[in-house]
Image 1 (tube, chains in turn cyan, green):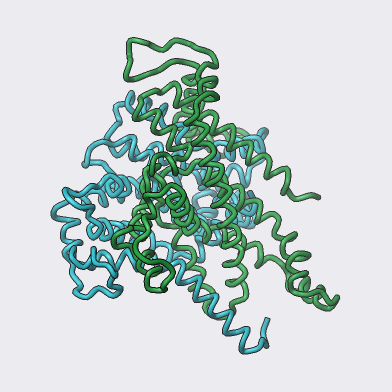
Image 2: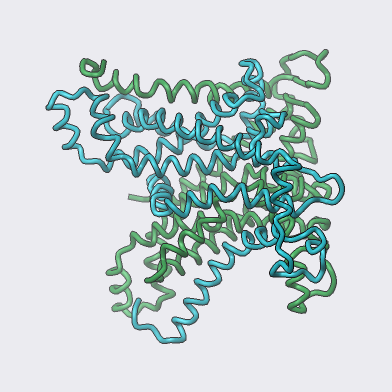
Length: 277
Length: 293
């Protein structure tokens, strides 16, 4: 595609610019909003670059509101369920990628169907189940369902990665007298690290962003996650857009950082899981 | 442990934890929902108990004008957003695919909208579309396209439009990445061959690109359609289904019946209907677009 006319090159770079503007502008706008004072916020015509930058909204996020607590809750729940989900999913993915057993294809199709079930369908039985287990308004009440709902996507990604690890290494280890489980931890796991990171990031993003389950299974600020906290937030008087924007900015920072650090792996994972269906 | 097990036995051991979690938190709730759908269960009227009523909840859904309205909203929302996401996603994928330098940076930038929680994106877009001090009204005024302030989220058709814009923003990038992976897999020789044959770039697009993207297109369409059919977070945060019920998706209507009207039996029946519709869509795509050997 080299050797194009300058005109076509300019058009191409304009289009690239449009893609970046389209993706970034809403984020930037939220960031700018969070740095404005209340008075500047409601001016029309709108000021683009904040005239008087202020951190008052960020102070309000932590001092007058429980957003700090919500962020902590999200972190605890997301980290715990991601780690546990990866552990369970890697066992299953090893079986799917490496072992021959009856009903393998059928189980994979079943997993796909389970992954397609809308959350809204299971939410009431889930609520009753978690209530009966006495886990409403607890971290475990969120972590356990999150593990379950992340398992299919984690298994698909890990299975795709495990299949790419050469068989010979494993056979050599088996011949050397390693047990299969030993082989899994000593040989496969290190080689599967990129796969684990990929699946981990994707599961982390899904869990951090989840809303319906967290909304239904929590009713106190002690365990509420950040998505629910922001969605249910109402100011005393006018709708507090400055504070909301600051909270949204803070809630997106961990995810954005994670994605930018691991984007190559994430894209590989999204497409590996997806293109194989 | 391990050494003496046969492959099938080892597989069973490895799959048990996964199966337990899915059985308890996914499979049991699905059957429970289907079972509840065949009963009356109203939390606001506990004296009614839990009587079996056959398919009467489903019959009620067929006669429920609000349910039909929510279904129309959802189908229109699905068609509009998935089409817009596909067209835009394909455009983004084609643009990034032609890049030689800076590809990774742009790809990462394009990925970001997908990573924002829909419920937070809903809040964000609600502010962008704000009638008093929203940036979209401001831009339109500065460009001289409109005078005064459009009440985006207060007029049914405009609110619906605004929600579809937000949904398209959120998922077009995801679509683009899957399509981009498909594009990267198409060997350059095919394009060279087609240009030697005298085919125009447009013809090459339809004769080479689209057919070879079939798999990636199918996957992205299935995933986005399933997502759009159960859309709840975004309209919940952006419009709460309003004004009136202009943006009340089927999932929101289920939520309302269950958690506001406390009619668990009816909510369960509606959610079973949603599952059937979702699986029908997935099956149809598969039949139409599945790779033909």
